[in-house]
Length: 199
Image 1: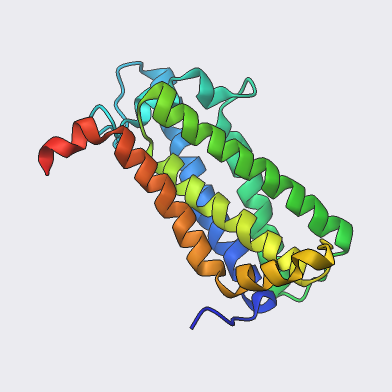
Image 2 (image 1 turned 60 degrees about the horizontal axis):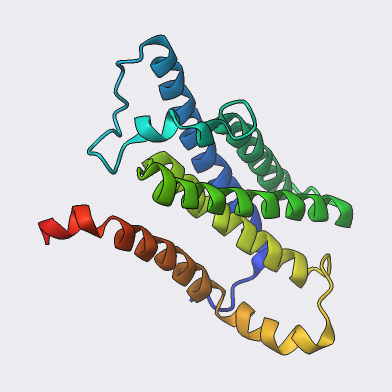
């Protein structure tokens, strides 16, 4: 069903959904961070156990990687995605340089969330459900913006990669799901010492 979809028709919806979910997640984290600043004893609703603990993640140095809370980046970035998606539905056409700029932002986002994944799992040893939601939609945004840019000729592929890209394009959803499953498997493997005892 999803193998041969028309990416130009669905990319606005991908951007809109990613924008809305990202804004909600970033806003929720921001509110909890403010409450923690106001009351150091405040426990976020997603502090479920030693592993699923937003509070531990929010109070880490990685939560303010650029000197201010990371969710502020999310509010701006996901707000932009929502605006672009709505604009496309309204008939807006964007030039190549704009799409390359969005691609650059997506590349930054994908690198940033994988760094956060590594730090969260292997350094902080805690997970934030809001953050993990952002990881999932950031990967989706990067993946489908990149495919869209290649399809539209905004990114030029060498001829020798055309065949490989045909395979990728045919299995785009499989690759995305595998990507998420690999991350989930790494998380489960690392925290198996805690969750394995319940199985």
